[in-house]
Length: 409
Ligand SMILES: *Cc1c(COP(=O)(O)O)cnc(C)c1O
Image 1 (cartoon, rainbow, N blue to C red):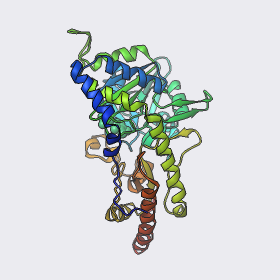
Image 2: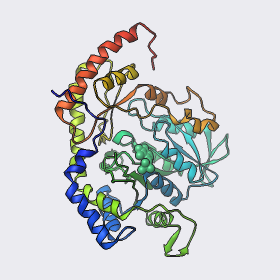
Image 3: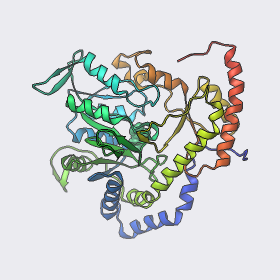
Image 4: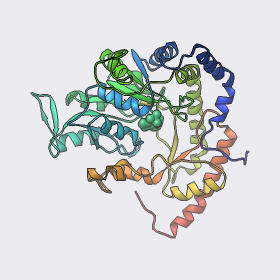
C-alpha cells in the first residue's frame, strides 16, 4: 500500500499520456491559423451532440456562458424568476441573474442532494398562483413570473428529472439542465421507459469543459446542448455578438465562443470519455466496498436505481467533516468541500433575505460533505490508503467529538 501523497485531482498524468495527440491538435491549428470557428469547432459540436444524444451542441467559452446563453435563448430574462438549488457552484445562480432574471431557490433531497421535486411542488403551491388562461405562474410575494427551473446534476448524478419535467409541463416552466458536472451521466426515465443522457432532457442544457471536469479543455470551454433548432440558432448568435453573418447584428450578444484549439483538444479527448467515466464508476465501487466498515457514521453517496452516475466527485458525509479533512490533509491526502456555504447564505445573495434554516437539507449537506480523491487514474492502492487514513481519523475524531456537543443535522 502506498503512503505517498494522494492529490485531490491529477491533471498532469492524463495529459502526459495524451501529449502527442494534443500537441498535434495545436500544431495543425497553428499551421492553418485556425483559431476561431472553423471545422475543429464544428466537428467537436457534432461529436458532442451525438454523445449527448441531442440534435445540437453549440460550443461556447465556459459553462457559465452555456447556462446564461441557454436561458436567454429560451426566452428567459427580465421580470422573470428562475428556480434552482442552493447547493451548487455560484455560476448556476450568476447565469440566471446575468440573463436578467431573478434567482430563487428550492431545497434538495437530503439523500441525493439534487432538487427535491416535492419541494419544487411546495414552492409552486404555497408561494405562487397559476393563471391558467395566460399560462403564467406568479410568485405572490414578488409578483414576478416564475418561468424556468434549473436542476443541477450535482457530482455527476442526474437529478430526478421525471417529476420535475412533469411539474414544469403543468406550470409551463422551461427546464434548463445544469449538466456542468455530468458529461455522460444517464437517467432512467420511468415515463419514457429508457435511459436518457444528461443534457438531453430539458429544453436545453449547459456543460462546462473547465479542466477538472470529466471532459476538460486545456483552458476554458463550455457547450449548450438542445433538440430545439431555434434555441441552438439563438445560442450561436449570442456567443458571437448577436450576428448570424459578419457585421449584421440581429441583437446584442457577447464574445462567448469556444476556441478552435480547445475544440480540437476536446474532440481528441471525447473518445476516451466513456472509458474514463467507466473507470470513475469502478473507483466509486471500490470506495463503497472499502468504506463498508465505516457505514454507520460515514454516509456514502447513494446511487438511485434510476441513475448511472459518472462521479465527477465522490462525496461522503460525516458529522466531524472538518476534523476528517484535517487528518487526511496531514496524511498527504487532498480533499474538497462542494460546497461549504449554500448560495442563499452567501453575501452575494443577502438581498434575497434568506437565513439559516430556510433550506435545511442544503445547509446540512454544506456542513457534512467531503469530496475524496476521484479520477480515472486513481489506483486501488491509493484508494486503500485514503480509506485507511479515513477510518483511523474517524476513530480519533469521534472520540474528540464525544466530549463536546455534536452538531446533529
Ligand atoms: C463548473 C460548473 C459551472 C461553471 O462552469 P465554468 O466552465 O467554470 O464557467 C456551472 N455549474 C456547475 C454545477 C459547475 O460545476
